[in-house]
Length: 237
Image 1 (tube, rainbow, N blue to C red):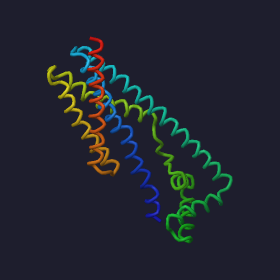
Image 2: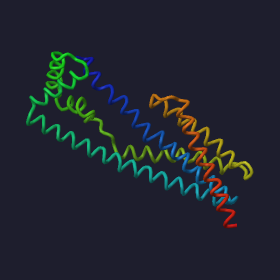
Image 3: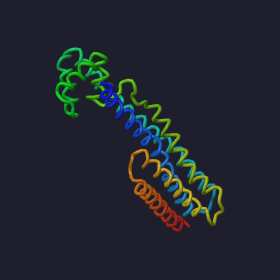
Image 4: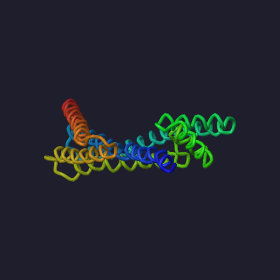
């Protein structure tokens, strides 16, 4: 019984928590690094004016951070509304047809590999303890006491994007004109290597592939935006 209950709790709390941090934190920082690096390197390709480069970078940081935060808030709010609607429906079903719901719970555990007799016993005991909690987690994969907060996700995205965006912005601001693009590129590669490593660890994925993918996307972004800036600067000049 204890093992069955522990199994019911473990996947959603462990994996769910990892995915939330992965989405709202690491990917936010990754987007901040790539987005602002593309902006400042692109502007640096068009002009040597430090004020113009910093202004564009800061504008990109602010706009990107609020865009990420707003997107996360809307996305998680929609997810939370859906979860609450499913939970409300489950409550109604438990009130109107408790026997059928208990049989359904037993079938879920039987499908996971328990014998029919043990599955019925588990369903009966969990129903006695907290039928709503048992059905929410086993049937819906939702912990009703731990729904994702839209505000927490929004703030996490805003802060993560801002921290990531500061890396290329400071790298290009604190170095001389002759090397600032290369300094920014080096800082971005280091930052993307770190976010790739962390994302792979949190998602139990292959580290090398995640880092290569991250660095490749960042390098391509800077290369394209730099030459767009060069072309634009040459045309304007």
